[in-house]
Image (cartoon, rainbow, N blue to C red; front, top):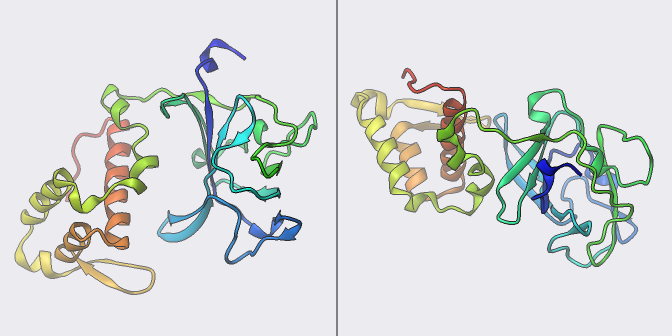
Amino acid sequence: MTDKFKNVKYLKIDAGVRYWEDASINGVPDDKENPKIPFVVEREFRGEMKKYWQPLIDVDNGTVVNWTGIEAYIHYKVCDDGHYELLDENMNIVAIADDWKGGSYVPTILDCTGAKESYGDYIIMTVHKDGKIDYWNKDFKGFEVYKPTKEVVCGLCDLPKRLSYLNFGDSNLLKDALKKWIDNHSDDDQNAPYLTTFTGKSYTLKHIYKEICDDTDFGRRMASNIISLTIDLLSRGKKTVQD
């Protein structure tokens, strides 16, 4: 292991799984519609709600953190919908392997079969009741050292992965900024349909603001998207946007 990875303590997975039934729990195939495997999280991806697998692994001993005492065999296909972070003990990002860029594969470290070659598109592992993973090999091939493109982004770099713990209704900074932006629009624009979901429900600017203030599920997703977009713009050096 090179010096650039010497502070790595954890591996965080965020994987869009194709077939949940390709995992078995205590010898029984998992439910493809309602998977029982631990650490399944539902979140928005490209305008739709989708389930993701988000375990945290201690890389030093090859153990899934806070595993729930089951035996699991996992053979997940993940194609262009995975994000993998190496973190230090304080949960700061050290390196990433990112399918969102449209080119990387599942990191070799997650092909826990004992084979010399990785299958590329698959997370394969056997996890025992104590969280231990068979054939764990601390191989960081495929990871790139994380380097924010702008110094200003450094304090924001790992904010998206923590957004689910925030109460956006209590975030005065976000509310104030959004209210100021909305107030720059005419009354007609504020009350006109501004956003339509895939289910056909429409929201005005005022509705969106209220949803965020009330900390509803929709409001939380909107707030998360706003912050993530802001981080993306900052990382690309864009300081202004048009209405």
